Image (tube, rainbow, N blue to C red; front, side):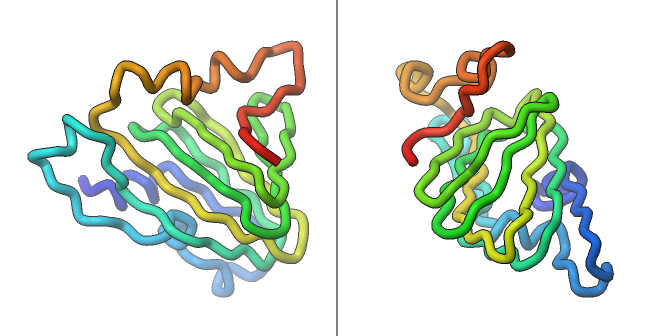
Length: 151
């Protein structure tokens, strides 16, 4: 199964708008890139990514997928929903999530939310842990600290 097929199986798009006007799940991944098997296990590899513009109120619900995700909000705002907790994703916010065992939703309540998203996997250098913490280490259950960098 290709990464695109896996991605589409892990994403549910819900909206109040008629279904014919809502893009396919793959739209929210940006472009899917060709993979080179000879280096995918040794260095970080981008599976898909690019700029995404959301112009309607909708919810993107993700189930676990074997990758990590970076999401940068260029304009507008959205909300990250994990385990009943809401975290704002405002302009200039960079989000890192380890999707391997994580279910979450992205909510768009405002007329426009522009973000750049990348899903990546492959080899990870041992020194990345202190720089890119897992969601478990940056989402304390009792605090409202989001897994975001910069604002």
